[in-house]
Image 1 (tube, rainbow, N blue to C red):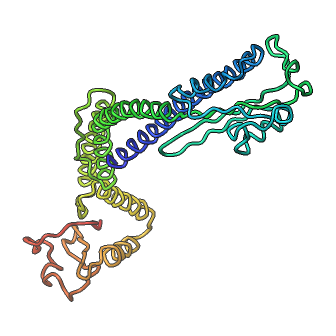
Image 2: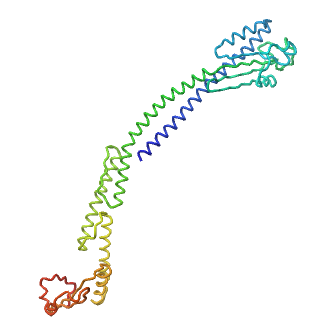
Image 3: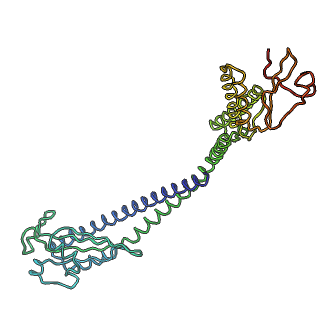
Length: 364
């Protein structure tokens, strides 16, 4: 039982540890990536608004220097300004970096909605966000003053890719560090629980053993425990109960043995032995009740013969009638021998001196 409980405790603690470490890892990962996404969107919107300002001020030729400074940010892996159809028609296709490179960028130019994509590998994790640049008034600046496009038309997009590997790794390291601390706490908890439950497990094993011995009629086993709480009260009560049962059953056996005049074959099981003796007493009582209703001595003799031969399995026995008035002995039944007594005692009962004869009935 102790081994099974120990396995169950460690399995439970192990499952709790895995659950907690998983929740911690996922939580820190989500927080780290969310912060990276927020930072990426802020940078992309900053680039969009700054380029709009450059366009209004007529210094668009300085945009590459601005984008180069953005690329110097440690977590920025790449940033590009992509031209839409309206801008290409008005100013030309531009450089290769200003054309859409993948389906995400093409989707933004076609639908005019922000698209983001997180790519995670074992060694590296990147986050890409593409935001549209639409021909709508923004902060008091009307793009239609410079661009030949319809209002709301997608003029281009800002594509930004950030390396979120360091942030993700820091989150994972922090998660595993907290998980390791939690693991140490779980191990300590497991040891404490094991030490706490061990005395109770030993008590349960003793109770189980005592109950098994009591089932077999042995009430001599006593439970010992070092506990001082209700468990000790339970052990003491069981010990007192077993002691009382052992004493009472022994007394019952002795009293029944004294009543019936003999003892049954003992098996060591006090319950079984006491039951047998009580059963013998019950049979004697029933026999007494039966012969009290017999009308003649011959009926009683017949019952005695049946008991001797069938119940007691005797093959040699005899019993006699003694007539005290005539001082004569008369054989009633002799089994297994022709004669148990000398002929002389039949005519003179005083001659049976030295013989052990138990009178059952005396004739009047």
